Length: 307
Image 1 (tube, rainbow, N blue to C red):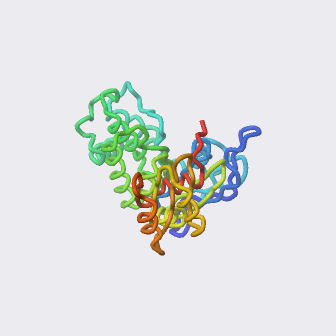
Image 2 (image 1 turned 90 degrees about the vertical axis):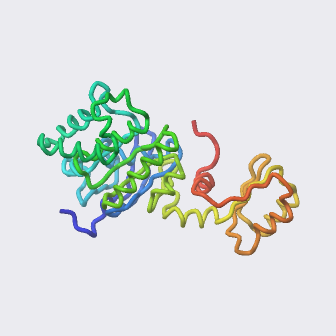
Image 3 (image 1 turned 180 degrees about the vertical axis):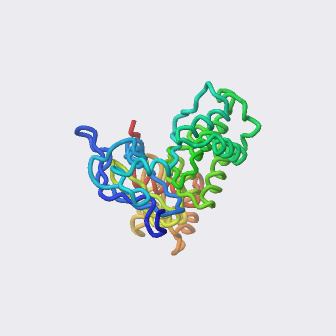
């Protein structure tokens, strides 16, 4: 049994190489029991490589990783029995019913028939899929498919859940339904690790997160701290800014980004700078809003297309 003070995940100087390409370089991180932890970054940042090493799918090139205090290299069988993985791709069996998808998957854990039926009933009820018990997977909506994949992830009653972009492609209503279920799981004491491209999702769900790029960690912290440090409480967006505004923000040393015919200004407004900008430089086409995690992400990783 894992001691309370042992991290659920502990990685030290973790690296992953594919030939001459380094996907992950000297990454160290720690995830505590009951924490909702996020890995964010552009495509190719190394997020998926890290989580694949977490569940033993991809071997470490160098460094060390422990889950539940067990070395992933030598304790992977016990580790796998304690984790659930929800992949981005739909890996459900289209030839089986909703119920059969869960029962068959339970067999991979050598679960007794009685326990498998009980867990299936519990999970169909939890994810509001009872009415689709006998339906084929092809008859499910996108939101139902994701909920069924989460249900399958939980069939072995894991202590750690790894979620690889679990809501990609869902409409807002379905996405929020999934978020509610993930919050319920966290409230039950489960540890969750999430990768996502939705900054609102990460800000809403994660207790703590890292933003990485080109295989390295750029920053780590809770969403509120990162927003305060890298974006500020207030953001002003202006189109076609004049030289007088550019001179003003440079003299005041206000954080900002100049983007083609647009400028984005970040301020905590402690000195009334937002008010001054509004009164002096915003006769029209000026947007005032709160800072977001997306601001942080774009400031740290850039705005250029990677693919």
